[in-house]
Length: 196
Image 1 (cartoon, helix red, strand yellow):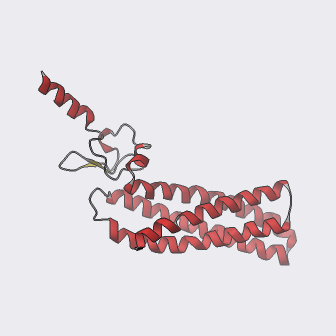
Image 2 (spheres, rainbow, N blue to C red):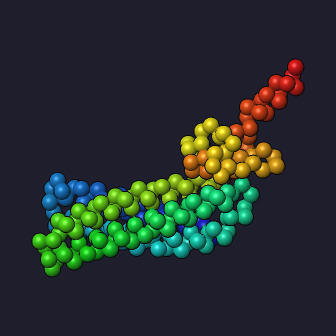
Image 3 (tube, helix red, strand yellow):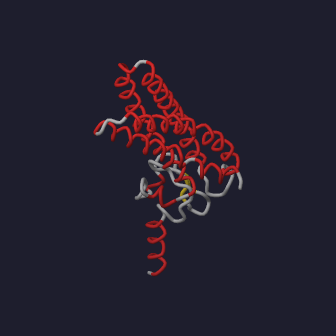
């Protein structure tokens, strides 16, 4: 197993952990339970810490994939920038969850405020980690990128064409390598002209 494979495995844990922990916290608003709340907050602390190995393996993975054919350096850059933001938010959410756990034991009257702050930042963490994962997936999965660049018009912002007319980068999420996308109408017109 190389570092890129490890990154692909590890990056699932923070998002799943945050979603599950956030769901448990919502449950405790409906049916208050100190035990469930403690598990949820602990899960959020762990999920926040799990972004660190994801970030480390992601940086190492960049060295492996950035020179591969069909990989958009622009998309890698967007993924990396999003990862920096998501990691910071996740660590803040984990820190707030830890603070709320401490408050729960030593200053219970402040738990509601700590819980509210943790849930707000936890929700932001879910969104930012999810967006980062989307950008990471689009690096090598054209079908993901197509969802954000369905028309393929000149690749959108940052789009590039290789010598063979393949579209790289571009669009809202960018693409990794989409043979013929965006060039279909041109090649079709050329084909029609050949037939005449």
